[in-house]
Image (cartoon, rainbow, N blue to C red):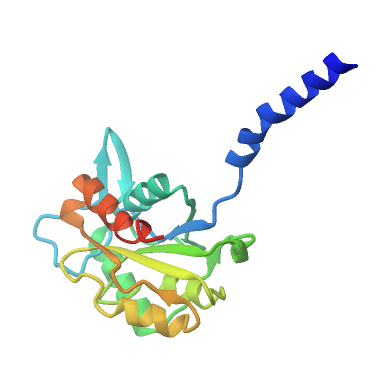
Length: 208
């Protein structure tokens, strides 16, 4: 009996670290990224979304930054997807984005985030489309109550930075804490932005 009890206790303590490691993340990376088949040479600075290739793998720019953040922070990852398909050709995508903005559209989103109340921190990523949030971001921010949560914005842009996006997020989620020093990455620097992302994450995580 004593030998059996010792064996059971040994097995129990061996499993404790594994159980601790399986605790769910309290941070979530939410991002919207539309890959484009486009040559970016000579493209106007308001063209926010594009693609990149890293280690022979193709990513949307915002997608790549989102994955870097998730990997470095241990956060879960969720992509904002719309029910309709955006054009992949660059000029057509810009026109579609402008039409949605003019119509103050709220694109229908696919899927929902389960148990969003369990997350304390939301990393929110998006391209800058016509100096504003893409309209699917309005759909997202009006669909969820992020009161009491930290919202850590990040964007990939062609020269316009966040424009007024930080203020817009704060207006749509007035009870959330919107981090004012969001991560802004030029589309021309995405392929080598790992250090920039790490420094940004370290800037607020070291104070926790």
